[in-house]
Image (cartoon, rainbow, N blue to C red; front, side, top):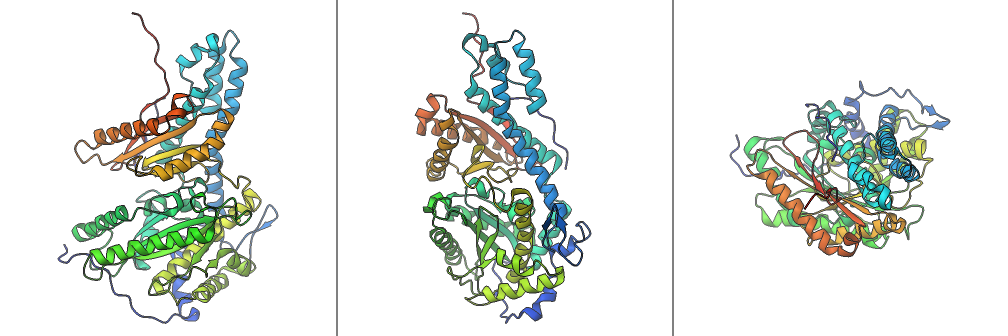
Length: 529
């Protein structure tokens, strides 16, 4: 693959336990002042003042709590990153028209460099005069190069301002501890329409969230328990992010999705486009995870959980408000669109008071504890900005209501992917284990790519810790193992050139981009006898 630039630099005595919650009766008047001294208030100096009333932008009235600065930042990132991929087909069409010209290679490389930022593989261009350009290989090559570009830029430039150690991540982590949580673990559905759930929909610093995407938001309980153990062990041994005796808990969130415009066809494929089924299955998985912790560990060990739904047409969220005892009523939720409409003409202070009141009113199973209420208030406020984002830049509803992903991401990692409909995730250690997720992705791309005679690009990724001897080599072995399994499982696609694979690894101990190992694109030049 094309060389890339270097990224910029950027004592306990008891076992981990879960604190007993303080019993409290919550009233909006008592809690409003406390809740509104939140993470966003700490960021006040960084964000634009919104004034007393909604601001108008391009004729659109914005919510008083919307951050126009953040929306402009995120819009620029979306246009830049998706532009890397969306320019590929137009450029390849131009190359197709040029391939019979005498100075084709010179013109082709100049065009590719100017439009895509990289040159094409010379071995493919040199064969064009014999039987025409191998467009399938060139397409896959370009997708892989574009992926490497965005990975490099993400870790070199921190375009989302969410890197570990940055002001936003530090402020959010402090806010999270104030809410009574020492770690935030989120599982969105693997659907590419939720790939932006962290940085855009929920507006959370990516480095402060543990994200694992699974089809239908059905995360692996055993693996999640193992991650819980590692988290609590770190608290016990190193007091990170806080001591084991501190009164904080592990918060697990499952994010399902639905379509408000076409609920029976554009919902979650893993649940037959049924929002009720998606919510029910995700809640069951959350409850089973909590029960696993409580039955496997002593001293009152437990976790908190939260169930959230995302409307993939508008990016508004619905939150199933948990009671203090974690009881959740699936038939009741808070729709942030309702809050948006109820508070649009208020000033920021009044809007925040209404948010607290509407959350408590929606808590049909009982009021949440104070920390959870504070956290939910912040999620609601963050999502208001995203609702305006879709209103401003996507005319209130995404044009690509269905799948429009650019590649499939397989394995473990992809910290740098935070854009809607950019990547379909198949989080797995083995293809056998992750077959349901991967099969859904292949089915999606048969419609997106194969139907247009374009190959399915698959990026395999395994992250490793460089401070562990031999970790990089084992990560590469994992990549090779998964590649062989993908080739065997989808042999017809692979053998016909309709599926290409890029193998990558990344060092978790360094803030650096992924490293390309090899791909299935044939660039071998024939030699002599």
